[in-house]
Image (cartoon, rainbow, N blue to C red; front, top):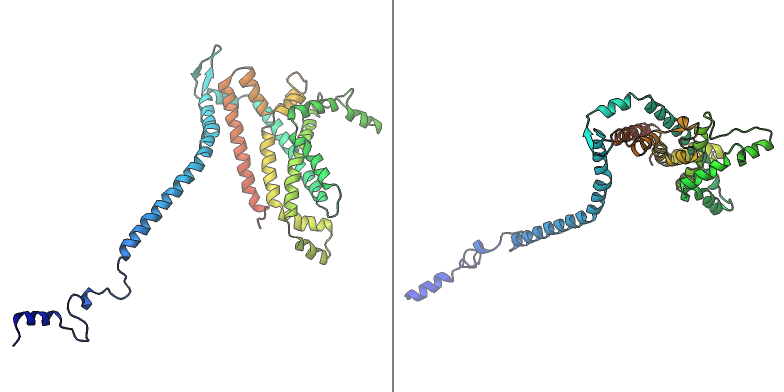
Length: 343
């Protein structure tokens, strides 16, 4: 017979069917297949680590974006809001301002001078766009293989870009002079009698626009040259094998391939032309008899805001300029879907 202690020890050491212990090391205490002990704790720590890394990334992203965001708000957004508020006021003769509602806008749209300056601005913009095909042709010629002195030509074309518009205006004002100007002297050599280009109402605006084209050629040529150099050479080789000449290659390969650059240049040219002021003001000025035919809407803004001290009226003009630029740019983006080809 077994004693009570021996029976108890025998019970603890009994094995279950299959030879596995039935005590504390039984199957009920072993982990299920495919599960590892401590998995849930480790995944929790990993998830918290990932969230901490994500918060850290967001923090540094905000640190780097914040200066630019503050600059946009302070120097772009707030001036627009401030101009909008000023456009609803009228400045007194001794300072101060009075809220007048939409009176400035009613006076503005009823002013015939506004529409005249707007028409002058549109004329100047259309003429300025003629510089794009000129720059495109020059860039295509400069990209010719084997052409010598390409770097010198690039520097010469880019020099006007780094020159102050006021200095350029003074120089061309002398060149356009009807009595001692170089242009009339050169025309006289071939039997053509020149005119006083900047005092003649029929030629003043177009003469200034030609100078604007000359000023912008450098930037446009550099961008077009970079775009043309990015066109794959094998396209030209395949076109040459098919018998296409240089002109055909330009229209069928070069122009479609660089159409995004043409669109980019056109947007910049339109915005720049709509904001032109310094070149026209230096070359003609309010005392010029042809100034009414060359005055742009930005010049009208300067006249009302800084000469006549009508700040509310000038602010309304500034907002009209902003709306016109946004509308024209939006129209360009809408039309570019029909002719711009993105590779």
